[in-house]
Amino acid sequence: MSNYTPTWKVWLQKANTDLLATQLMLAQTNDNLLEVSVYHSQQSAEKAIKSYLTFHKLRFSKTHIVADLLTIVAKQDSKLADQLKPADQLSLYAIAFRYPEEGQHQIALNRATAEAALTLASWVLKEIRAQLPRE
Image 1 (cartoon, rainbow, N blue to C red):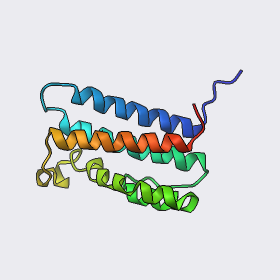
Image 2: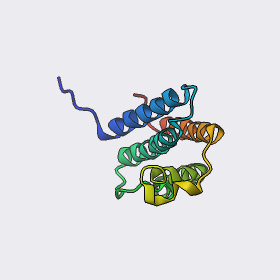
Image 3: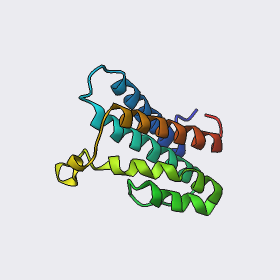
Image 4: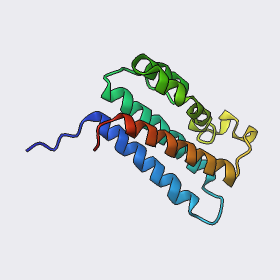
C-alpha cells in the first residue's frame, strides 16, 4: 500500500494549517501576532487556490499575488475566478509585514483587519473545497 498523497491534497492541507495558525494567533489576547496572522491568512487563500490549480493540472508560477492565480483559475472556471476576486485583498499581506523595506508602516493593521483577513481566507478555503473531491 502506498503512502502517496496527491500534490493538490498537500496544498489543501497546507492551506488548512495556515488557517489554523491564524485562528490560534487571533485567539491570543494581545495583538503582538497580528502581522503574522494576516500573513497566514493570505497564505491559506493562496495555497487553497494552488490546490485547485494543481488538481486541474493548471501550471502556475511562484507568486503570492492572488489575482495572478485567479487569472489561471479563469481558464478552468471563469465564474469561480470572478467569485474569488475579493481574495486579492490578501495579496498585500504576503510581503508587507515579512520584509521591513516593503512598507508595512503604510498599512493600518488592527484586530478587526486581522479578523477580516481570517474570515476572507476561511471563505476562500470553503469555496475551493467545494470544487474539489472530498478528502
